[in-house]
Length: 263
Image 1 (cartoon, rainbow, N blue to C red):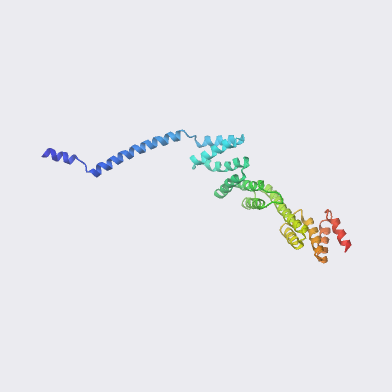
Image 2: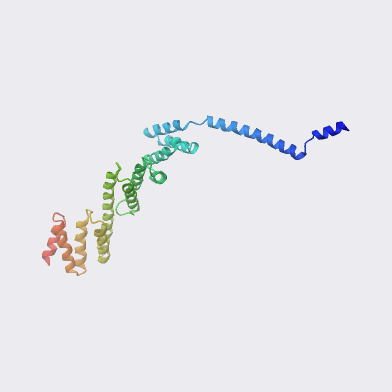
């Protein structure tokens, strides 16, 4: 009887035996998993190597190879000090590939997530350049023109002392002149269609919104012409007189003088 009792005492409850089995299997799985993860990491390049390879590939214009390295760096080593730089570099890679929409996304995210980074001004400048590259001819939609201006204004506002600020100001002036030209293009379309009131609306918007543009003299001439055709002689005279006074060397100044002499 004693032997049976001893044997019974040595037996574990079924639940305990099951838990022990589960624990043993779990330990084996963890060990096997660690081994697999170690093997996987062992096959990966370290972040420094990925960054260097991506940079060299970019400089050699092997953009697809560079893209793979920088993406692997961001995905496999997101906490590495190189991951932030890789995000900006991917913008450069896509810019080099002329994939401006993709480049724009990376520059935008970089500038938003790292506004105090030493290269934040560069990211904003490149964001503007991505939109600048998509600027269409004057007879097409000018949404990209406006987006480029906004991005460059953001750069000047956030980083007025940036080395990119002077170039940004030059580009803004050019882009605003393009928007003025667009207004003139539409105004001329209305004018040719004998919709003189429509033409006057666009011309007045041009003078109000873009007074510094190179199209002011042209706008004044067409304002005078539109008023002339509407029978508004005094308003036409005011436009011609302003044109002659402010832009005496304009190609339209001679025509304006002729109009005034005709009464």
